[in-house]
Amino acid sequence: MAELPPKLQAYLDDFSFISTREERVDYLIALADEFQPVPASIATKPYDEAHRVIGCESEAFVWAIDREDGTVDFYFDVLNPQGLSAMAMSAILDQACSGAPLEQVAAINGEVVFTFFGKDISMGKGRGLTELLNAVVYQAKQRLRSD
Image 1 (cartoon, rainbow, N blue to C red):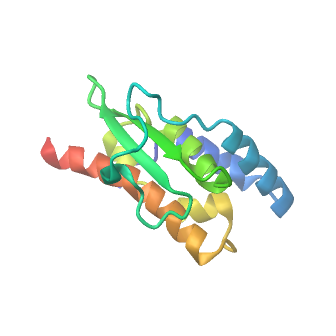
Image 2: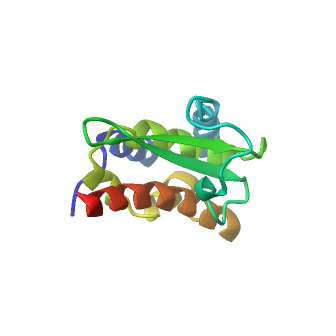
């Protein structure tokens, strides 16, 4: 199995030092503050439904734009202004997966969601965040299949 993108592994390592729920929440809020919505040069509202993350209650969207080097830049938007978890996950995926080798992106397992958000997140939130991750992994796998 391929290793994870190095930036994603760095985030996972950071989260391994978190010992309280309060620390986890503070870190996730800080990550949500780093969230940058998709630039207008990539997409404008209303967005094409083909980019919607099915199952995400925060109305998340994902775009994958090919780079000349064979990697992908990922862009996100979260329409629910209260969707801090989706914003935090989007920021992580953007920073960790954009420009990473496709084999590494394709190898990401949905369990990373629970590493970031904890095992006690609601079923709906867990599903939505996992589907957000799955949308990124799917894009990487599709490109690997077409090579």
